[in-house]
Structures are given as structure tokens and as C-alpha cells.
Image 1 (tube, helix red, strand yellow):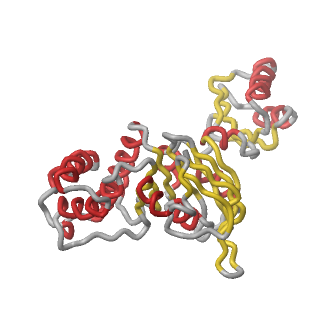
Image 2 (tube, rainbow, N blue to C red):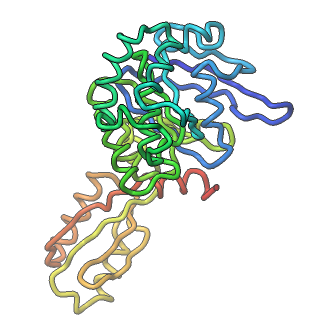
Length: 309
């Protein structure tokens, strides 16, 4: 669907995007993660045909985004981080205006727009002026507008920026529905827990480099950092003995006690964890619970980028 090969973008001596390679399959919901200035927006604008590249190639469903910018704009729907709406238009008039930019008749736009406004929960706002809509409603309207020409790829730059929790939830539901319909979506965001919930794959950018990319679970499992094991033990009167025993086990790097459990930093995989549990039980320690703490996207992002902002 989307293929980016050796993409580079310079602004004078500043290297905004450095030799980026990325493939996104049709139907993927891909999340771009990275600190400010990492190159996310620059990459997305190049994909949308809004910015020239210094070097490399970008194709969307076989269309060259660098050489055929007019054609690519028919294949891509774009929602920028600073969206603009025409306050003196009503919601349906707004949709008709943008549909006309793609050569659509008023009748065709109205037919398509009805479904899109229903999708973004704005069916009851068709005849109200855009300037009366809340910020969250305006943002969802921008998503509907970006879909008016039925693009193959939807690109959203910080779609939840500035939205309150309720509006973020509503936007998340809209994007999930689009994903279930088979739309290919690229999202950039700093709200990392929401990305991990919405996206099937992610790419982490830092200082113009794509540091890692792939399915969320794969990146989590291959992050290379120590995982946390929670071991619930019945009766922990001999904490010193338990600590000594745990510290002697393979792949255990740190042992901490909580109220009714031991928290272990662990560098092994599933088989090594199973062997650890076997050794603990073999020692006669009564285990009532044993599970791996799920790493979140935010901690992985901070680990990879060194806590950059």
C-alpha cells in the first residue's frame, strides 16, 4: 500500500528526515510516535504530496507521491495538526465545498456526506454553522471532509491535540470504526496510550531517524529491556531467604518486595520464566500468582528516545 524508500529531507544543513524506509500494508492503522522535531509531520506531508523530498521515493498504491502530486491528492485524505474550517458555512455546505474541489456534483456530495457525517456522529449538525461546533466536533468534521473523495489512505497529524477526554474518546471511536472498514490510516500523536489501543503497528522516530517500526506486540516483545514479573507468595515471613534465592536465579537482575508479592526484573523469555516458576515451587515457596507486567507504549518510547521531548 505505502512504500517509502531511503526518504531524506533537508532544510539547508538541517536533516529533518534521514534515509527513512517504511512499508505499510493495506488496512493497517499505523501510529507515528516521536518527540517534537523528530520528522513525523515532514514525512506525512511528503506522503500527501504537500512537500518535496530531497532524496528517496514514496509510492501510495503504486502512485509516485513525489512525481505525481496531483494524482496522490486523490488517493490521500489529510487532516493537519492545525485544522481550518470556514465558520461562515453550514456543516453540509462545508462538505459540499470540499467535494466540489474534487469535481463532485452537489448531489454526489450530499449522498456521500450523509454517510460520513453519520460516521463521525454529526448527522444532527448538518444545518448548523461550523463556528457553533465544539472543537471536538470541528476535528471530526475535518476527518469527514478528508474522506469526501473516498481516499485509499487517511493521514492524521495529531488528531486529538487540544481535545478534552470526551472528545478524544469520540475521535478514537471514529478511527476504530474506519479501521474496521478496512481503511489504511496513519496517525501521529503524543498521547501514547491511545495510539497503542488504536494502532495495529507503530513507528518510533527520533531526530529524523525511524528507530523502529512494526506491529505493536512485536516491538514490545523485542524492545530488549528487562520485563517485570509479579510473583504473589503466600506467607513471606522469610523475606531475606526469598530475596537471596530469587537473586540467584538465572536472568533475574533485581528483586523488590511489595505488600504480598515479589517484583522481579527479568531478562528472559517465556521458557526462562516458566523455569523460574518451576524453581520457586521446587523450593517449597507457595505461589498464588505469577504474571508478566505488560509494558506500555509510553515507557518503550522513553526508553528508545532517551526521554526526549
